[in-house]
Length: 113
Length: 116
Image 1 (tube, each protein chain N blue to C red):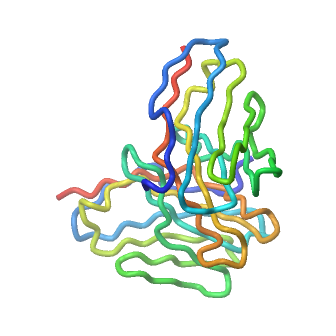
Image 2: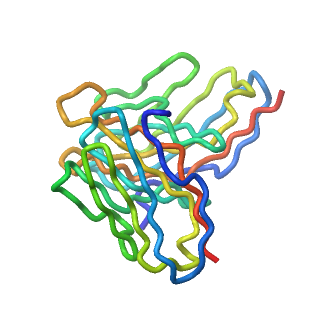
Image 3: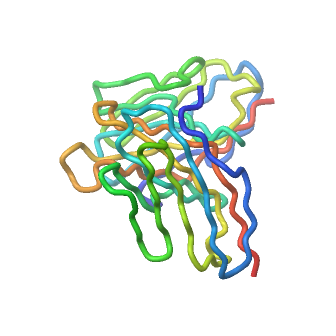
């Protein structure tokens, strides 16, 4: 059972455009929602994370939008750059679960120059 | 991240062979994890450990075992490898609750395992 559903599977964006990746979760006990970025040949690395007490978090060109009632959250990459080309994973976890992360299936982002 | 290292980086083995993947970390973290990554499935948790005496099964532990030899070392073993265990394997660490960045997991560079 996939508890975190991620879309799209792949995304191609022109340089300077906005990249949007969406995730939906089922478990209402989740209270921590990180996004990880993975470059080829590397392990995933934390990009940005949000907790459900806020609806948006911005760090530079990266923004998480969170909709608790819809059980959805999304990553927006503004002014996308070729260096942003990577695989992005959303994830979720809950307190008391040893912070086990449940990952989405990943989105391969390609930013064209 | 050089703070979490995995060996080997690539391994090809045959069905039925026993294989061990090793993970070492210099971050001083108590929590360590093993994941496997498959295309279209994301990362799935195999085992995790909170300290040397604590080992817990994750979502997909069947066919795998682990050993926490020290705070800094966490090994994953495939007792009898099968082709559907072909995947990318990642080790990760995280600090204890109450510390800064307690929810962040730090991943190693991965081991690409092929079982023929």
